Length: 343
Image (cartoon, helix red, strand yellow):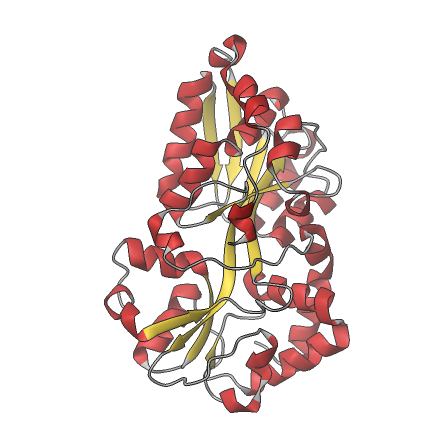
């Protein structure tokens, strides 16, 4: 059974007290949320929190770089209470820019595994996506079973993958740097470039569509893009899912790489207590289940049930590499991509 579901729910009693005590039900006030999560399904997360607490959420949405630049420009006058964004590297960048603050929350620290927390408690992961390998079942007799295998000569001209400037690419290479060492990771990246079916282009769904079109035979993608095509109609993909197989890599070693979606309390949050309450709410069973049911993600809290579309991908061993270590290796990963010509 996957580590994601192996551990029993912990801290449930503390969470219940935190979320249902009499003052909390009528907390009132506001929460200014800066979010780069662009999913319509998150509306349920926000409305449930407002109904539960009486706190009104005011949202500012944009891409992560824009939001970080805005918070930096606003400085001490920033109205931001919470930053939500995708990927470890952006969370760490927000910390490095001084845009977040450390918090203490028994609820969060109990519910979220240590390796999904910043070492200074400035940011936390609340949902996950596994970055795995997909392949054309008719064309690939022996699909790669590890990330390292993507460098094998047998896969020359077969691989579709994201750009080296993309955070998903940066964090998988950052993880390999931690596991293999920088020199081996550089050799891997150079060899994978030689196996490209085309120059990197588009998003994860485009990599999967590349298998359908026959442009490539192997693709790397986050699981939730494929699970979404199981749950709902995705043009150019859902009708052809039967031709695509998948591999959770490195099951005999460190496990499949996990990307985070997470957040933290803004450095100058005017509504700090409401901000902490919101992050605590994101660890609740109902919110965690909705990350899976609404957006085909894996919960960060162990033991929370998976949605059918996510569960269909099967159980696996996830990489529990500390998220902070990954974030610290991102600059080296970008340098390697530049050196080996991973566009």
